[in-house]
Length: 160
Image 1 (cartoon, rainbow, N blue to C red):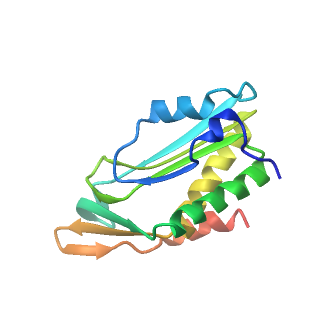
Image 2: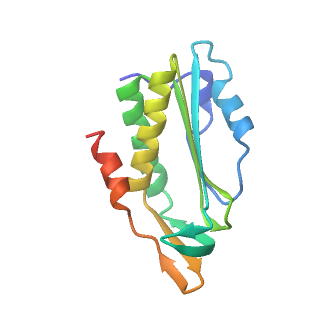
């Protein structure tokens, strides 16, 4: 198993936070000090203003502290072993968010773009299906919890 032990990985690989993040700063920190890096791939998820045909005015995200970070660390460890990536960073926001707010960042580094793209998608697919987060949307019809989607489970199945 390859380890994410370069200078870029001295910072936390996982952060669960209420505050927004700066994509440029996070990518720069991930790349710092690792001359092996030939590719960086990132994904930023945002709050949509519609879901299942209804207008969404806000989304509230909750998590299970400690368990969430441990779960995401395990997902990253599996991505490192499977794709040989050099570094990874996952930031997931919690609390009350508005449409267009950033929710999640997944960023990875590797020698070549193919492995970066695959690892980024792998981590995101596992986050959507296995990380312990709960999402509640506010709509014109009231509050509702967001259930897992069949498409998320199908995306995850291709990695197994």
